[in-house]
Image (cartoon, rainbow, N blue to C red):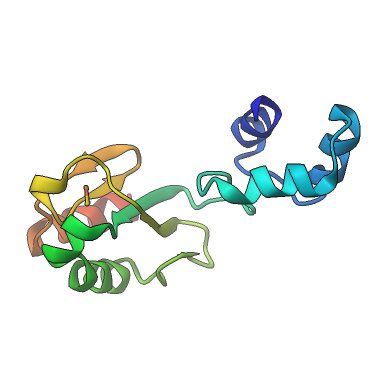
Length: 131
Ligand code: FES
């Protein structure tokens, strides 16, 4: 885990080619390293965009309309959900509960929590990503 964290911190993601190298260095099987790497959603397989928008898709936010909000954000950012825009400006991805359940739909924008997302908040998120 510390090696995976260090690689992600250094490179912004963990290259797939690093898995066998880590396994050899730690005397682990490739399957063990791969299993750890893929179990935790925060380990990236590819570089992220300059801005990272994570929209909560857990139950409370879904009940508050997260599905519609996610579609609106994807359209406002011109970025497919779960993808990084081809120009590398933004990554839009799911997250599973931010602890803001009472303020859903919720998101994390560049590490900042945003709750009660409405159309105005979506416009602000889009403006931040354009900057
Ligand atoms: S369910 Fe979305 S913040 Fe908890």
